[in-house]
Length: 451
Ligand code: PLZ
Image (cartoon, protein in one colour):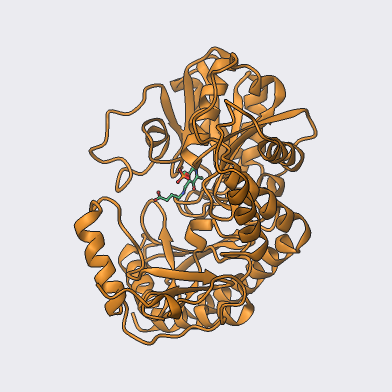
């Protein structure tokens, strides 16, 4: 075993040199050794995208065990939005860890959980009275939102959308659309989950109201509005391909839910907390969901998730019906309070907007020269490129995978997504500088030209 000597491991955070630097091929020898141990010790079902072992991260850089510095265009899937190892977050974590690490909020409550709940009640869309319950992961938040909606309505059926992603637990696998890799062989799935067609302007050519009528008609005919406890939707779909619904789609679905006593749930696990250039993506569309699920960016990397929503719905559960040993862990809450302070006061939302403008500008210029880029879409620092066959418009997953592989080999952490695997998505930390963003796009441009 030849782990990097501790003296050579840099501290993470914003002081990390903001420069891409490759000192070995990827993986270098130390990462290769650690990944060989992974292969022996960790099941192959737990995959990885970038073949390096991380030792430090900050700003827009991830450093690996061989001293390579990679450009981070993924934020650990939209999590480290305030920047990895942000000093305010690290200090809050350290202070709380020295105070107490756990009492269980259901045994002896503590103030930081309540303060996170108050912040979410204030920050999520909608001026109505709200309450918040905390959990550990996005999937757990989604599970609890469905529990709450069922209890409130006394109904069983739940509708989710084509291309939707809501997690990997049994109920959330049922809500998730894509079979491979998320569901295949892992069933049977939870019952009473129904799927409706999504608004996908690039592929369906429908207006928002037209796409909404299509979805509503299908749900009315195949499920029945009276049977539906909840409709759950990502305002901008994440894993499914950064699909931005056409204007008016979400509003019409929300109105139909209201008219029919159906709880309208926005899954903002990926879109939440400044990612889209708004605190929540729901604001872009002017919707006020009954319940909002959040996770990822909320606590800068610590496991924390929330369900926030109308007080009368949130209060539907009998006492003791909601909870979990770790939900709202005090260290995660300390991290969340620090992260929320940064989101609110340190210009992070504006930075997301700038990143979006830079990315869209650069990508549009590439598209003008390259018909394989079928669509560029997204908001803020949640931008995607859809690769197609220029003749037929068919999704080109092979090209997408080849470009992503080439970028990663050059030290740019690039993520793909989409039902058809033909989308490259940009989810940089909002602490990344323009120079690294531009360099990342330069490398992508060269990788695309070489295919
Ligand atoms: N809802 C909208 O994006 C998580 C999944 C990564 P957890 N997305 C990343 C993977 O391959 O497992 C996600 C999401 C939306 C729910 C979730 C689930 O959040 O914290 O991963 O459980």
